[in-house]
Each structure stands twice: as C-alpha cells, then as structure tokens.
Length: 132
Image 1: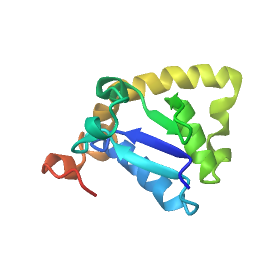
Image 2: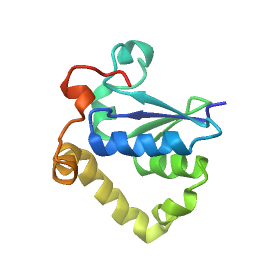
Image 3: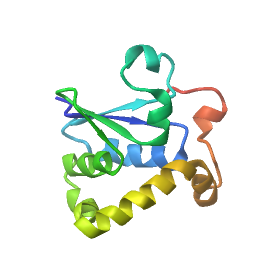
C-alpha cells in the first residue's frame, strides 16, 4: 500500500528523472507520484496549492499529513531502501546548507535542467502531452 504520495513538476527533466529512478526502485509500491501539471490535478487534489507545489516539492503521507522539500526527498529514497544515499540530508549542519541549496535548485530548476540536460522542459510537456 502506498505510504507517500509525491507531488512533482513533471515538466522538469531533472525532477522527472529522479521520479523515474524512484519508480524503478519502488518494488514495494510504497510511493505514488502525481504530476502537478497533469490535467485535473487541482480537482483531484484541491488541498494542494499549485503555486506552492511549484516552488517546493510536496509529499503526503497515507494519513494525510504533509511534508515538504528535502524531507520528501529523504523519505522517498528511504522508502525504496536507499536512505543511505541521502542520509547526509539529515545531519544537522549539512541539513541547513542543503535546505539553502534545495531552495536555489527549486527556484531555478528549469534553468539548471537546461544546463545539465540541454532541455529546460521535458519533451512530453513541450508537445502538450502530459501522460506518461
């Protein structure tokens, strides 16, 4: 049963890539993924403000409680058995630095994606298709 739902920007190539890695590793189906730009997203998830979800990664536990940003990243990787890859995000001093880095990344993710992948937006969003 899904433990954590991740609300992500499916138009961001780096974000979509990370979600793809998580999907492949999630053999226990502990995660579910929702593209915040998918059709009818706001109708399906009226409690998620699209503008806020665009600024910071949102996650929702099965009980309805919300987590944000690097907490979503840490818990999602931990749920697929790779928490050791991101354990540094929980270290007190590094956590503060990582939060600043995350805020920068989140704000400029499309520009960063363009530098890293050569594409500021994913192909499925550029052609108007939001389905996988």
